[in-house]
Image (cartoon, rainbow, N blue to C red; front, side, top):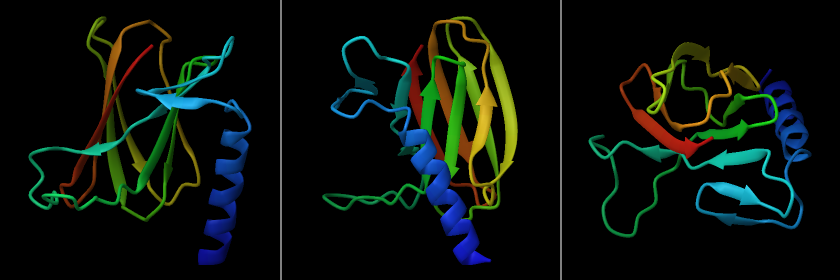
Length: 139
């Protein structure tokens, strides 16, 4: 079963990467290419208040890969580890739009549809164990 999940996850990630520009540079939160700004890779971080945040030069492993596709106004989420049922909150600070989803991290790829309104979005991922990850992006 684990090999099947790994294979399915790999296929989902490959399909997602087929939408990404091939000769781009990651600048801030956006993957940019002249004439194509349809896909934004979200930089997912551990909340500063989380007790297990490493100090110094240590890096923390983030088991979440997320992208925002402006072409269809959706966030695509892929979990690289099984985290249980993850609560995902998306808020547009400018318009007040709010979306709450609970996603089973066993899913190969989860899709969170948004309104498509422009603004500053904050995405928060909360695991059953209380670990909080977050990201922000402009749309």
